[in-house]
Image (cartoon, rainbow, N blue to C red; front, side, top):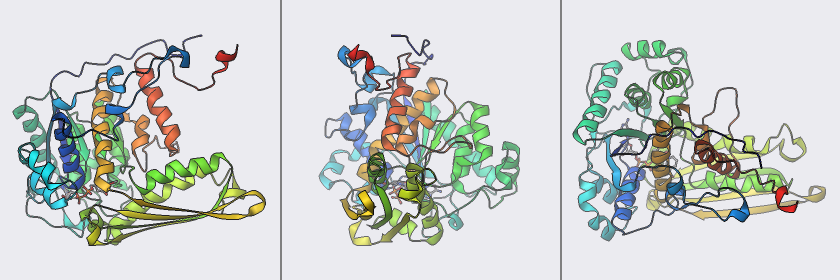
Length: 441
Ligand SMILES: NC(=O)c1ccc[n+]([C@@H]2O[C@H](COP(=O)([O-])OP(=O)(O)OC[C@H]3O[C@@H](n4cnc5c(N)ncnc54)[C@H](O)[C@@H]3O)[C@@H](O)[C@H]2O)c1
């Protein structure tokens, strides 16, 4: 068989310690940090993480060669991760994890020392972008430019004081109010001018992302905020040769949507309506109770079906699809979100049917492995010389970033195949096409 890919990409080794800097040490971040600490101590397994648990097939099915992904590409070890971050509350990760009530108190006690050592730095925060939160632990520099410089110093001193070789940043802070790309977002020069003029077009998430890019730190955006989607920061990522990825971790209901919708479409079953509702009682739920933050989330959640179902190509099946998403803040549920989906589908001769999904999930338990994989893959991308938008990581996002002229891939199985083929590609292995005709020659 001809080899389609001849050359391996040069990948620098994953030597030394990898810093993980997290704006937003809340439920997701502390569940992630606690899980890594627990896995290191043998107190739990990193279930849900492809970097830790998934294999990757190489060569033909008859070759019987499927190493673990972590044995195939050089990834940082969980033992080499050092955590830090920023938050407006000033609590250490143990205190936050306890308050979030995601993990059992007994497990938290066993991890107490590891978690107490993660103390947030003072945050860059402005209430006009997240209306339902306030906190005392914030920086007080005089404008957004100086706030960006303060974050650059934080990153440098975190790196130095922990003896780190490399750092990755993952935004796990709250969802900011809805924004669209504007004049201050066009070029890096426009952006810097806007920073200096304290322009309202720059929310905190963009200031963190700017500081990351300026210091050569890959940036992944776990919330649906605009953040690195703007032309100025995309260009800066290219200039600085830094990977960026986003946005909005794909976890509960949207994960289900991107599993089920491709299946229905694959069998050419029509969909008339998809009604999704959620109850959620954690701080994220409180933030999303504000209409501005909810709009940001809603846009991210709504985009999925249109792209997967391609109503323009299949008007008979999906043209009039009615898609609704609701999130209700309901404190008694805390992090244990419950979602209901009602899907009105249409079969042979237009006969209607219904599918109901009731997912009793745990938001942060689903998000934590996604954070781990993104940390390790973003670091890999940097060492492999890949920079700008990392579309191969679409698998992890509700709204995957792509080049402006492309539509994103939302189908989970296309995303998985794209990710594994990218890993094969950077290691000089053939992609797997699943044609398989050679077995029958
Ligand atoms: N859990 C999931 O399944 C999931 C899925 C997709 C996206 N997300 C997103 O991930 C983010 C984190 O979720 P969570 O459940 O941990 O929320 P959380 O409210 O528990 O944590 C967010 C933390 O960010 C802090 N924060 C807010 N603005 C900040 C700023 N400017 N700088 C530093 N800290 C700031 C808050 O004080 C809070 O502690 C949210 O944006 C959420 O929408 C979560």
